[in-house]
Image 1 (spheres, rainbow, N blue to C red):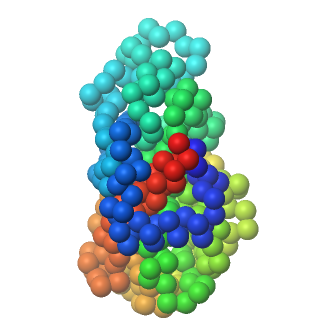
Image 2: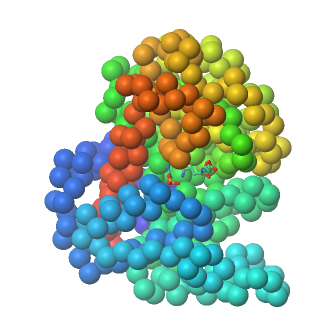
Length: 315
Ligand SMILES: NCCC[C@H](NC(=O)CCC(=O)O)C(=O)O
Ligand SMILES: NC(=O)OP(=O)(O)O
């Protein structure tokens, strides 16, 4: 595997799950694979899980790791092409990326959507520049339109908890005070579509995700109806795609609560975290025995290690 930007980069879901299982069984069994190899993790945005789990995964494989928080530790980086650089950004990605690439064997990048330039976001202009100029494999640690390490961890978690071959998995929008990217939702849909699961997406009108992610996916605008018989409830806020980056609703009746969970088939509750309690999900649900958010986050180490292992094997 060369880069890891979306589900299209893995050989197959079955193969990825098989690698994840091996890694989880003994995460230190492949310590020789990364010896004298270095991974640099670049963050344009905040992170708790991605930063720690990816660094840990690289260390489990014997790699050295370095972290750069752009905007805090380093120069602000310009990503627009052809601009006159007379503003507050002293360095362009076109120099910064190959320089970073010269110091390492794998680059991880976190660069959220701007939410003001739909075209630039959906063309993945930042991560694409890393792919074009790095000269080494690039791993998305959440880019503008996808968060594949998260979706892979979500898949592992569902596989570990499912009680039937074809569980009903519901992705529900929930309210949030700030406009958030569509990346987690897009990516979750993209990965779930590749499984045999029954997938239903529920959100208020106006929150439709991009057509190319949603092709063939069932949308149910009635949240309670969507929850009926669900085995997994995956909550996430996202801002509007069509009315790009806008908050169209803060309707707290969409918060996942005990009453709605009562409509499900004793569903497990999932969220990628960080989560706003009593906006996205009630305390009673996230603190219940059906909440698997901590295991889900723990599986981020496994998904990252499986991905890095597959990349190292092809270096
Ligand atoms: N990495 C997982 C989620 C990251 C990001 N959430 C956030 O920015 C939440 C911030 C807040 O709650 O203010 C998102 O939705 O894409
Ligand atoms: N779920 C996730 O990616 O968390 P962080 O934003 O803390 O990395």
